[in-house]
Length: 315
Image (cartoon, rainbow, N blue to C red):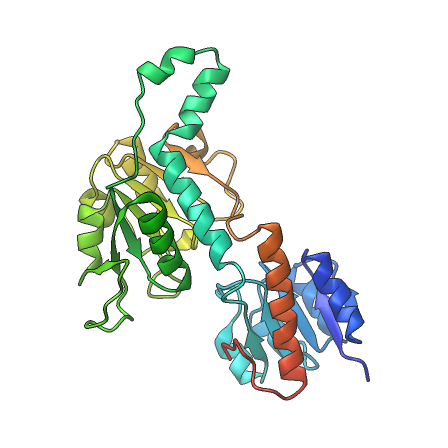
């Protein structure tokens, strides 16, 4: 019997070609609606998902399904308890988009510092002399605060320190207290990050504990010139509190690749703010990362279906 893999969302063509080369049957899905997913999964052994939600109802209704491969890092769209209950392996691609997300984070930091949105729009409107009115900032010597010092957070720290001469402080409760990291000064509480940093960037997963964990209290601690950067998950932030802080100029601005919900409603006030840069959750969607994520997801599927222990396994 040939193994069959469902592809319900767009992935790199290189990945689809490779699946066929190694003898797997590829089934192109009809979308990510729950009932459609359940129907499409009936005759599939594996699935590669990006944003599709795989909850207990999906798991229960797809008995042939053996492995779920997350095309990315965050697995908040996959019910891990249900996966354990129904004996589904869950693999992911934690190393595939590190550089892409880190580069996008630095892009947002620089764009905020240089006020790119506002300056560009003013010039397009004929205001060449805005350059003498709205002065921008250098990032060299500024303090970058990082919440979550995993693979991406540490890569951002290295880029910011060695590439741009920034001073790095970070908070991560899962790092041993006595651990030394050359690029970073570790602090004991995230309050220290929010109080002292000129730029704050978030790199932690979405969990029950982290959902809306950044809100009014944190924004009130920030310098009124500081910028808030988020390339992780929109639900980590109390968006209403963020909008309020931006409206009242309690913080300097924000660079956001994620919102809550996604896509953001067109009436979301963030779209109308000069001091906010929004991108459509595309930090990890470079050509290079898309290929790596597809190939790493397939590698995880191969390992599970070959009865090997997966390299990158959640369940």
